[in-house]
Image (tube, rainbow, N blue to C red; front, side, top):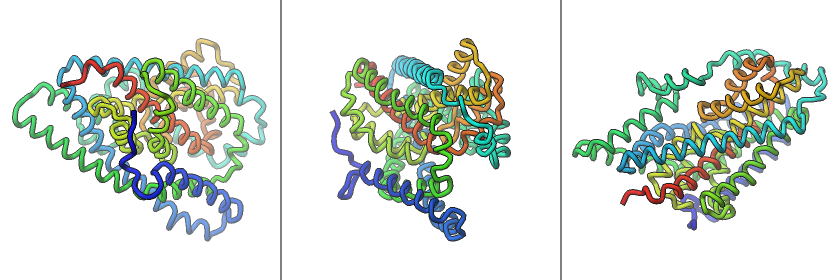
Length: 429
């Protein structure tokens, strides 16, 4: 059961206005690319007007991510009351994340094997796509990535302030988690005052989010205009088979796997769920960032899905970085696509290695635009595919990033529904 979205305001609902912004940005940007590509007037418009508007919108959202993560996760843990409940909620969230992410990657890898999107690409096309991207690809391939024991060690921050300044959200989340555990264990007046202050920080951040979302359609239109005016559709056409496989896999997971999970485990109507989460999906698609979408997702979970706040805050703040089904799926498909392009035959064992690392990569990838690209480069090196091949997908990554982020954020909200359902008996009085 859901109720009317309190963040909409105005004559049209928020998701309708944001959809209009998405469409306007794409259409206008495509026309501008077709008519004015290379024109100094278009470059001036992008540099001095369009990109600043889009970046202001993004930066305003990112500005509130840190206070939201710290306050929402700490309060979500503290409000569980019983630390045994925290363990149960955390275990359910972990099991859900690993299981559904593995399904996503297996689905993507299966479709990549079936449809063979990387077979048949001409040498001329590869050379043209890589032209001008070699330097960027080399830089990305050398970017650090975390997995295995490195991820386990670095998730514990030696300095939480430094972790926050560097944007290390996993470390910040670990600090917030420990802060919440401490608040749940210590029942002094000072601890209650700190809890009250965090509640105030959360309330203020959410109020500021409503102000930012009021101008979201303009920010969304600016972001998409800049992307399409720069790239146009040429690169998308060149990589249509690859894009088609990724989008097909994402759509299948979104509209087949999630509804089955929601219906069977979450005991929730998929139609009502998707109707409720439209604002979060629109924000995810336009920003291509799970972290930037977190404020809207929290608002949707509490005001439209009516989930218990302590569960929703815990699952969504964790999920913004750790439950990235779309990212894991994208990584698996991209590795197989590039292996096919370079003619590298991956054995069944190697493909299962790709699946496992992609699942871990989905957990450890930063929830920011293009955060999965360094992980893809790392996996390519592990399975013997030239890492510089990542340059082949740079031209279409922004669009696919928007698509996979939509799946990520939808998956976070589906996880919140499922965990809330399974944790119904654990809710504090």
